[in-house]
Length: 110
Length: 127
Image (cartoon, rainbow over all chains, first blue to last red; front, top):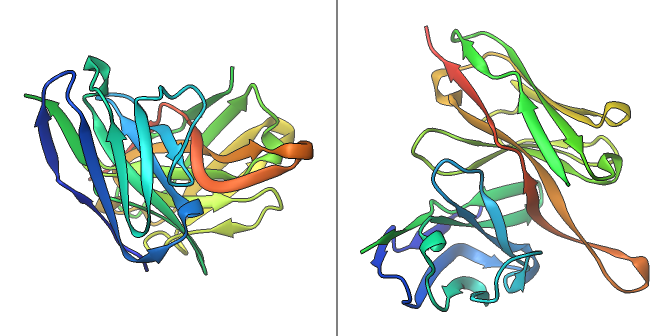
């Protein structure tokens, strides 16, 4: 079973800053099978990125995803107040079918 | 508007059972794979179950044999029957839809992500 580890656990930043979040898989995974979500306090998660780098419908272009193999990155080019939230990566394993989430990275206001 | 609304959560004793429901609207429910995902208070997300459009089901080891996911396409509804509940099953349970992207020539592509989420229903297992 593939384990996803996100780095760091918490980031303290100011609005307007650039942020890079990391997600490392314990084995190489297909780019098609890696997604990122945002969860604001008290809300359900929201899909941001699928297929490692494709933005979901309605997601602003300040969000971008990249990476391959075992190392994936979510970048927010310029933090807006509404971007302070917890971010999760997720992968899909095919045999047997299984969905795995990382433990999350919290982006908090400095 | 594409929407998922969960119901059925509550307080149940260890060893008890509970059935969650999810009402879908605003999209062709019968053409999508569907999932349940849970989140204990203050913790991360855990996949719980999947049912595809053919009715095939998939579970992680943590709930296999205790939970059963099902769908009723005529009612645009998804269900999760939870038996032999434990304290560790206490969480908010989300109903989610599998991502499907329309490509060229009307073909659909599947990327194994979850693009529509309900607001969740809370399950508490405690004596």
